[in-house]
Amino acid sequence: MAQTYEQTEQPPRRRPGIVAAVIVGVLVLAVVGGAVGWLAAGDATDVADPVGTSAPPTVEPTAPTAAPTSSQPTAASAAPSGQPTGTFALPDVTGLDFQQARRQLRDLKLGVQLVFASEGEDTKVDRTEPAAGVTVQRGVTVKIYVSGRAPLATVPGVAGLACTDAAAIVVDHGLFPRYPTGRLGTVWDQDPEPGTGTLRWNDQVTLWCAVASPTATAG
Image (cartoon, rainbow, N blue to C red):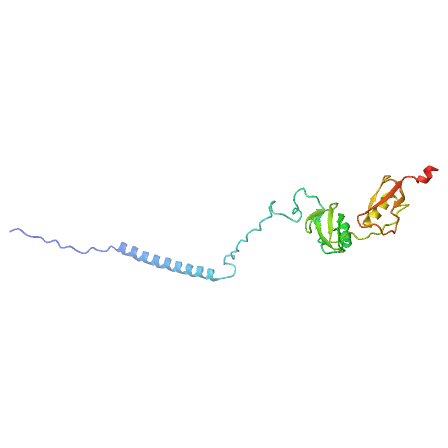
């Protein structure tokens, strides 16, 4: 009769060396975990400390101020290129007495031409040409249009003066000099005589000028 053998599986035996290794590993993990926890606690303190350990505050960059380009006009380059210096806006003299307006413009080194109406006694300025506000420069002649006709003018006495000086005085009185013998020398005669009230503004005064007196030459 055959015999039957049953093989019973026995639980494995734990080796003492393996058990010891496992215990050592557990102890090592415990030590490492404690160290990591201590380091983490130290980091948390540094972050919370506002003195010395915190990062410097972030400063927002300021947009740089744009430098003026050559296309932007400045006080020195506002005038158009090539425009003469000494230009200015013509003042408004409308409504002023024409003599006051004339003096004001002449003080600005402007030439003045008076244009009177054919009738009326109004001496106020009606308009100017160029108009008020237009850019002008010294030496430009401005026409002053007067609302009424030319008033009577006072004829100055200029005999015996240098012809150029006499002419300036005549012009100051609103009259125009005429030189039948030229502009050189001294005025030896004039027409009309001074003080006569027959001339009006813009009329002519004749000045006879000569280097030597005609009487002395004839003798």
